[in-house]
Length: 170
Image 1 (cartoon, rainbow, N blue to C red):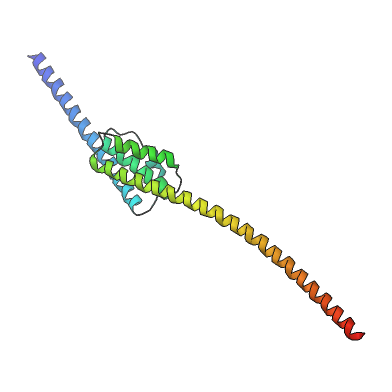
Image 2 (cartoon, one colour):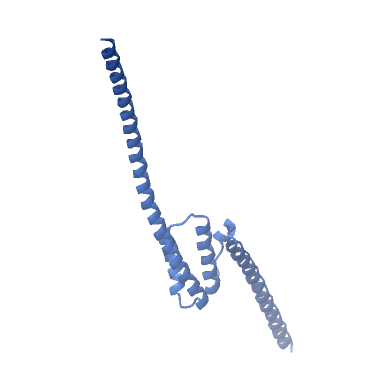
């Protein structure tokens, strides 16, 4: 009889610990979800995310991992501290992960397209900037040459005026 009671007590205490463990896991999951929601809200308004969130901890759900990676990608894009190859690799890993929900794979695909276009525009801007710098240098040379020619013209005018004065005096 005592064995049965002790088994029941052990079973009930195990069940109680299991329920507490599940409850506490849900609380921590809800805390992360709320911090992730807050980070997504900040990113959607253009505000940077706290470095504490970016450093983060490991999560088990592939959806949460993908959402966290998307927040990190957008945070680095808004802060303009990014390497194109790294971000494209992260977004490609999200898009190709079969365990990630469809809507997140689609979002990462959209971001890949936008990132490619952004990089293309960045390259075009650097090319135009190079041409602009060459034009500025050419403009400086032309202005310097114009200044020299103006000086020479003034000297020639002075010489002409002097010779005319000498002719008139003779």
